[in-house]
Length: 150
Image 1 (spheres, helix red, strand yellow):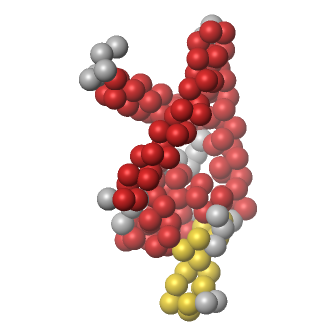
Image 2: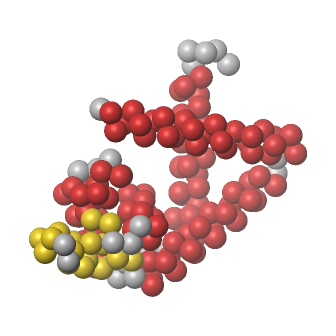
């Protein structure tokens, strides 16, 4: 692999895995959620009480985009807006039990799909992927830091 093509090849490979997982999960879990909805739901389940502006910053989305996602997820029964006691104008996002169940189902099915794909690789390839996980996490942290700086 040429050094100048490595970034594009890495991006294409990671995006391809993500795209195929998303498509396969889309057919197995209903109702279907868009990628941004899943990301917001995961964030709120992991950090109950997060505000809309903080969620927007964390997801690198505009505040009005997050508000639109919150409205859609609230209508589906996955999120509840609570008034922030410290600032009555602000809302805190809370997951519903349905949100936790939905994400648990999504994680379970995602793990099953990846486990199935990994089982078709030889041991050396599985070890190579396992060794790459810390490096990929560091890369994600660096990209997050660059986004914060810009």
